[in-house]
Amino acid sequence: DTEVTQTPKHLVMGMTNKKSLKCEQHMGHRAMYWYKQKAKKPPELMFVYSYEKLSINESVPSRFSPECPNSSLLNLHLHALQPEDSALYLCASSPGRGTEAFFGQGTRLTVV
Amino acid sequence: GEDVEQSLFLSVREGDSSVINCTYTDSSSTYLYWYKQEPGAGLQLLTYIFSNMDMKQDQRLTVLLNKKDKHLSLRIADTQTGDSAIYFCAERGNAGNMLTFGGGTRLMVKP
Image (cartoon, rainbow over all chains, first blue to last red; front, side, top):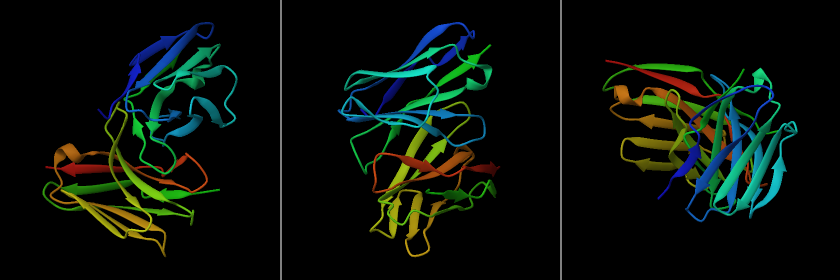
């Protein structure tokens, strides 16, 4: 099983809403990531969790709040987003440093 | 910081070989990756190469690495219309878990 599962696949939310994106992997990977991808651009790293601890926060605004409840799950809590936050949000996992990363299919987020 | 560059676009005919090129600047890169992204989908890991290798072959895919010139290429033999997608190269430095992506090359395969 080399699958990273993200839910929901699509999400439309208003600027005053609170929502969460979910990511799950059962490969025993100890590093998990959130990336943001705008159209026709490469993915941009947002957060890295290593052994369930936040190890990298790439200066992401506080309206994005990551959470890693256990080694298989990664959430991204969203609050008071702006229309420019509309993008494809990708979750990835890897066994650890220096190894391949597997990506989920992404959540297409639209902020209205 | 690290930089990864790719050409924007490549068009080939079905059955031909495709070669997608990538250059990077981080001399401490440990692994280099090729990902494929179809419209509206996530990134699919195609293959990767460790920095002490210079070639890796996997069915129709051949990865060549010139570490001296910091140049990576992906050759797709017998390209099919289903290979049409955006291809991203990415590198992982020695410093941590981060991947640095190139801007992506859009491959168009004409029948």
